[in-house]
Amino acid sequence: MFSTSDTIVAIATPPGRGGIGVIRLSGPEAHRIARCLIAHGRDLEPRHATFSVVRLKPNATHEGISVSAFDAIDQVVATYFPAPASYTGDDVVELSAHGSPVVLRAIVAAAIASGARLAEPGEFTLRAFLNGRIDLMQAEAVADLIDAVTPLQARAAFDQLQGTLTRTIGEIDAALFDLIARLEASVDFPEEGYHFVDPGALVHAIDALIARTRRLLLDAQRGRLVREGLQMAIVGKPNVGKSSVFNALVGTSRAIVTDVPGTTRDLVTEIIDLDGVRVTLVDTAGIRQAVDRIEAEGVARARQAQAVSDLILVVLDGAEPLDDSDREILLQTTECKRLIVSNKADLEPAWRDPNLLRVSARTMTGMPELREAVVAALDVEPLRDRPEITNVRHITLVQRAEDALIRARAATAGDEGSHSEEFVLADLQEARAALEEIVGRRGGDEVLEHIFAKFCIGK
Image (tube, rainbow, N blue to C red; front, side, top):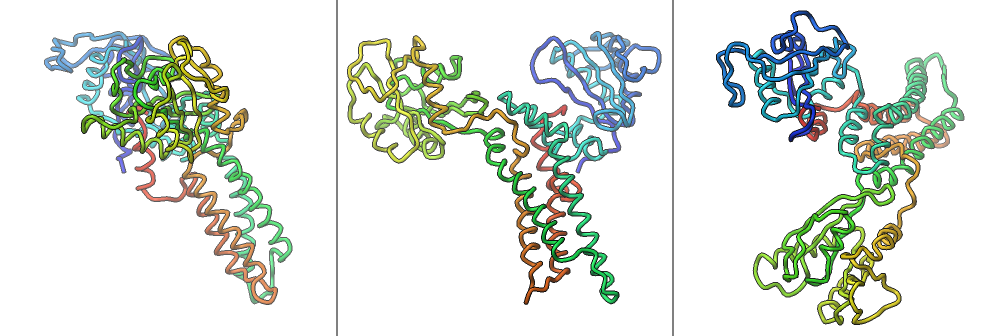
């Protein structure tokens, strides 16, 4: 794991140029290092924006910029958040400068020269977790919120960041803890004959816990759909307009479109929002007898994408008669969930099928109807309500907790109608361990490293 006793620094805004770029410092030396970088003559006032200029150390070169005696490189707004009331729980200083990559990297280099260390991916949020500012579910919600593509994804992630799932798991855990405590008391004083929970109440309490975990798991399918989305592959022979349909659905010229057969050699993907569902579109190479090894690999990848997609969009050329290649593709996709469209509706049709949707990727004719047809073909219920649980790690652990509760419920009957409190207790403790792993009270360093390695640097 990372050290938490030193001061870290990183650019907190996305790569590239922008109006503002933010450099974040966190750790015991954050305020001192920030004072070394700016011309402000006094200590920074907590939670107040302070305008100043950045002055780099003399007789040094930062990101190719030669620095003479205390050269000013940019104007900044410095904001100081003392521990523990900061994002990470440590002292934090954020320097908002102009969004030039050269300037931002120079400021980071100067901070490192003054004693900071470059932050690892997710290290700021990891410190927030380790310092008790957020739990592990909320930390994962930060990454989900950053990665959100649809408004529903963003709202679901924000709910988890606000602690809605934390409270639900906490309520289940509190009821489980009370039950475990009473059972442990019964086990610890067997000679007195005390039973702090009678068999009937025990069964009722476990049934109530199972019902609560089951409600979460019933919502899990919708949650995974919101978080992970679905995949749709666009297939067809060369020059039927697959890439044009792809671009029309995406809303931008993402894939190359030419009249040369075999232009698309590799998979081109883009994520779109369809009625709140994250859908990954895959534009594939035209399926035909390949003319070279590169095109053959493209066709092979097209078939692989077709095999793993939730929906196949088969594109036919409505301005040309159907040929053997079209019929072969239709035959190959018979067993798949598919939607067949006739493209080039702006041209004179060579054939008609009243059961197929006619579209024109060039004039956008029929494209709104195509989007509606895709949503209907994906067979997704309208996702108006935000699901409470979306993360596969959380779902797996809730399932583990429920399995343990079901075993505990079965153990209450025992042999010949008597229940063994020791067996019940062991299963209840296993259920509680799974719930504690969700929020991060249990689990090894490798779990934390796996989760936070997915974060971007600066967050």
